[in-house]
Length: 242
Length: 205
Image 1 (cartoon, rainbow over the protein chains, first blue to last red):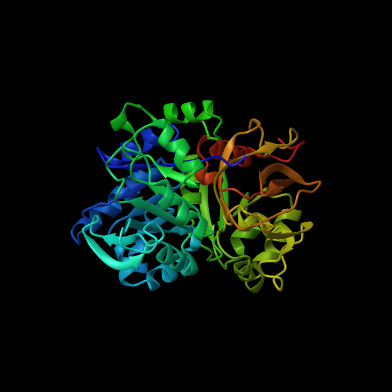
Image 2: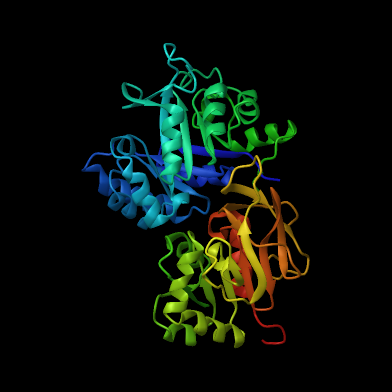
């Protein structure tokens, strides 16, 4: 029985220490997003990736500032298993093909930030795709962009609902389901987690293959282990740490 | 313990090398050079990507060298496409023959409402007699990412269920393969790699 998956976003403290702790507590995958991603920051990022990967034996995805297949190659060399691309892939979708060709589709995660468009015929399927942390629309619609990403060889979609992000009011299950049903690759839902039932909801109604549990510590559940134990009690298949 | 990891230019070896080194193995990476295969103590054939990439093994003579090493009793572990290569072939690249150590064919998952590729953690049902999977309890999870799979047969060492039951591990004496990525499968994966590193021919010291 395949389990639902949890992706832990490391956003505080020393990434290497944090990642090891999250993995030990049952995170199924670790995502490191370098939000600065400046030129000067690259060497630091690669060093951080190297240190984080060192003792980590679960899938490890790195995103932020990957603009070329060469950038991706350096991150893989440092120990990442996957890279996540967002604005650079929107600017030049060939980036997805280029990384996939060299490292395999399983190594390319396309991150999409989308916001429902109340003026569109279908506000959910035609949710607008944004870059720069949701500040700038790029004129793409979520379902058609996700399909193009898949056709170009993306291995997974990391979908963040800009409407739900930070609300702790639950994932956008309609948005997640619209994308998940439109593509044949796994969709990781992100944005809006506040309670355990939000997770059961996004796996059932939202048809998510995985959920990003970034702010899990912010809402009173102290670890991935406890969240998983709660979900197991609800009858959801999860991998419990030894 | 010395391990020869074959680099046939199919994806990133970093994680496999890191896991083997973490377990104390002395790792040697070999590409087109046949000499390391001739003196190998253990061989690991990793690989993510397309079955067609195994063409490199034929064109370089590595396939023949590996066949000979296996015949000498050298423990061999194929990971992902490296496991599939042990079979007669795969419908992913019908013109590219595998090693044929196991006679079956690998094929794509059947059409269903489930997604292909199969990506993520899934559980193992290991055969009690498996030496590679010794100590792996029923239902332990490991990490998969693949669209093609080997059928269940007499040599199957573990079965996993996704769309249909498939061989998630295969084992006959010194020749072993895993469809999942032990280097990405937490403590369970490390336990399996440790079993491989400790594998000795029975009756030998």
